[in-house]
Image 1 (spheres, rainbow, N blue to C red):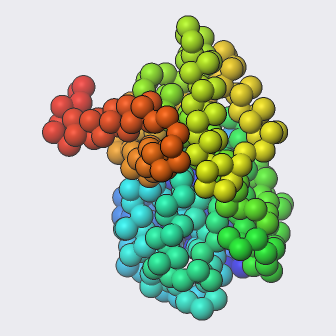
Image 2: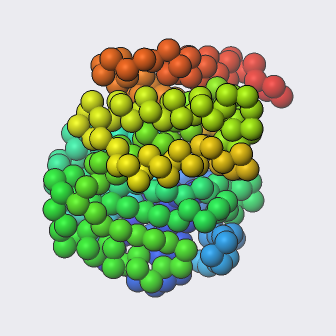
Length: 314
C-alpha cells in the first residue's frame, strides 16, 4: 500500500509515523516548507505512552505531489481544507481513496463535490495529541483509535486493506466499520459538548466538573447534541451516552479539546466547522440553542480579536 499523508502534525505525524515504524505501508508525508525542513533535519519524533519513536521519513514539498497513491490520509485542520484540497488534487487518480480524519462532518460533502463519492471515505480519529514547539508529536493520554469506512456501509477491500496495514502498528487501534457516518456523528456529539464547555469556560473537563453545576451543564449539552444527531437520523447508542456521561462527570479529568489549546495559544480555531455547524443543526432540529449560540459567538469574537492583534502578548 502506498499512502500519502498530508501534514505531520498531531494526527498525520502520529498515525503516519506509526505506519512507518510498523513497516506495513510505503508512507510519504506532503509537507509545507518549514515543517518539511524540520522533519528532514531531525526526523519524525513521537512521544507516547505506548513507546517513543524517532526515524527518518520520506517527504514531498508543496507542489510536488503526483498520482500513484492508494490512500491519501487527510489530517489537516478544517480551516485549512481549501489549501489541503489544492495540495492533494494532483495526487488523486482512479486508484486513490481519500481518508479524512478532520473534526466534524461538513468536509465530507466538500470532498465528495471535489473528487467524487467513490474517492472519499468517512473517518475519525480519537486521540489526544499535540505538536510540540520542537516538532515532537506528543500523545497526551491512551486514546489511540482511528476508525474509517465506506459512507454506504460496505466493508470494501480498500478499507480492509487499510485496517490490515495498521494492525501491527504500535499504539494504534484501527477499525474498518460499516456505520462510519453514525460513528462520526457520535464524535461530533462528544467533541461538540467538550468544545462548548471548554471554550466557554476556558477550562478542561475536570475543572468544569469540579465547579458548581458543571457536571449538570455538560450533561445537558451532551443531551442536546444527541438530540441534534437524532434529528439527522443518527440516534446515539446507550453505551456511548453512558461512556461520555462518565467522562463529563470525572472531576479529575484533564481532557481538553484541541480548540481550547489552540485558543489559549492564540492560534486559529475550528469555530465554523464545529460550533457553527452544531448551531445551525440545533436551529434546524428545534433544539434549544442559546448555549450553542453563545459558544459560537465567543469563538467568532475571539477570531475578531486575534485578527486585530489584540490578544494578550500580541
